[in-house]
Image 1 (tube, each protein chain N blue to C red):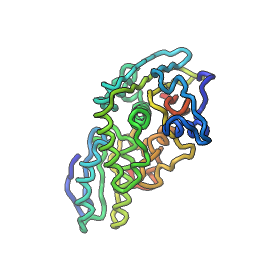
Image 2: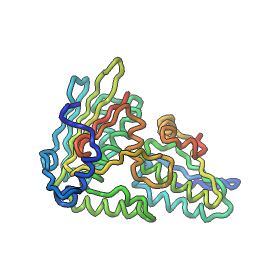
Image 3: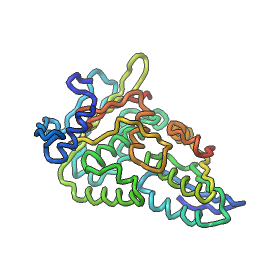
Image 4: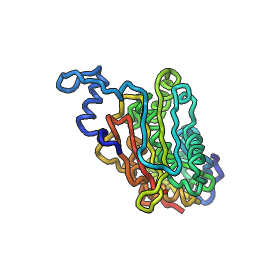
Length: 208
Length: 100
């Protein structure tokens, strides 16, 4: 991890909400936009990799992307057969969809919790995808060995303002609500998951 | 994804390929008549041909389970591949569903 980054904490979550309201925080102070809020997505994984992949998915691509097949292709490019890739494809798909839905399209996850919310969510998703002009997701994948274990490190950064990820864990079996289910699944499948900045960047490691 | 008929009160839905949010409507259209059918007390989802499922699919399964439970119908997940089975276990679904 790069030292200057830190895991998103409560203050960052407040700051994110403030930014959504137009740059004023809960106490009425103007929030300075950091470079990474409006800047181009640019992320790196430090250290050596045996396999490496760097992909920038632009707005034009995001409008048409079918995430799961794209991720399957990336897995193939990382030298991972279907047997070898294990749960890596679902983890990366969930992270990418989160970056797109919440980061780029600004869809509130809570929408799915309401009666009929699931459908409304996907209607709104399509609507915003159709309207999308600006935005991109930068994905870096690195296959490496750490302490005698082979793992896949992934880092995603979207050009959005970050999303309000919950510090409280979601029970996957709790109810039919889909809010937070994806990231909780990712947490359970990975050996490490960290949000960076205000949540527009995530780092995850999975053993393969 | 299709309805493969019913036998002794158990209806079978065969799922295939990717089971994800894009199937929300067609999945619901398939199971709703089964919920309305008083002769059915078990809905079996055959996962034999499922290659992949996502977190939205998990939500869809829970939604069906909740609706079924209210009507006294049980949801069974069958013929899961080892990857799918692992994923369901990670999500603690083996506590909620009969999985085979």
